[in-house]
Amino acid sequence: MRSGTRGTLSQRGRGSSSLMDALRGACAVLGWMALIAVLLLTALERVGTNGELYYQLQMRWNVQPFSGISDDSLRVLDMAMARYLSGDRAALQAQGEDETLCGVIVSVFGETRPAFHPWEMRHMADCFDLFELLRFVRKLLLLACPVLLFVGLFARKRFAGAVWVAIALILIPLGLFGLWAWVDFDSAFTFFHQVLFTNDLWLLNPETDLLIRICPEGMFMDMGLRILAWGIVALVRILVLNTLMGLVLNRKEKK
Image (cartoon, rainbow, N blue to C red; front, top):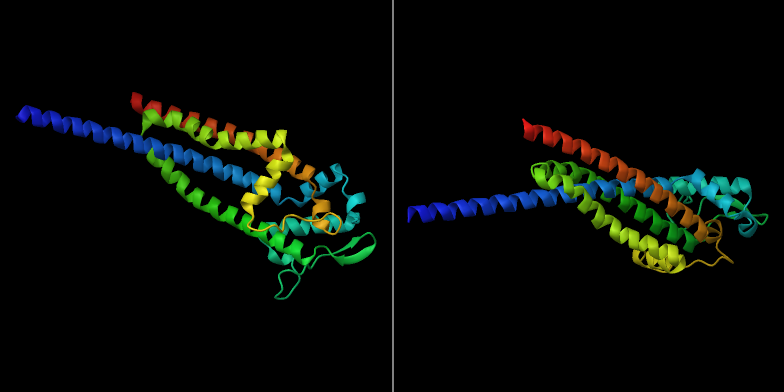
């Protein structure tokens, strides 16, 4: 009876150890996913709040003849939008309580006027909120990432492969969306907006709305490619970090 009891306790101990090892491995996967997400969100923010990049891409897509905005006005507006999306509400809004009034004055087809109509400003406010959410989520992930990776380090055998699981879990859905955008950018672009926005203010009219004339779809395609390039660099860095951490773990096991 005693031998049987000891055997049962031993099996329970092994089962408990196996469960803890699996949980630590899951923490490693979540930690790498958090780190990848942080880097991708950072890339998205840097591309999405770069006024100089706006202007470069606008020149590439030759927006001025169609938009009617002067070169000086376009540069001023681009920098104002970049500062606004970086968290500075005053960069784009007029002073006062009405957030739908644009404070940036531009020249469009020779007419001096506020850059955006109230409905365009409301859409910009939605974009502002999304970037604020991005920064908030990134802060949370930055706090969680080191804790999860530290716990995951104790699952030594699982840790090395955790990064590949994390990459697959993030890149497979992103890759499928990217493939969709490559094949049919219009439908992917529409789906993207329908998911992110709870209203249809993003459906602007190029005949009346300057925002859509200075930000054509091609500009967003180019921005997406730059985010992709940032993402590839980030993944290379993560794989290098994973390799270095794996070497440290192997040395400890040999000792």
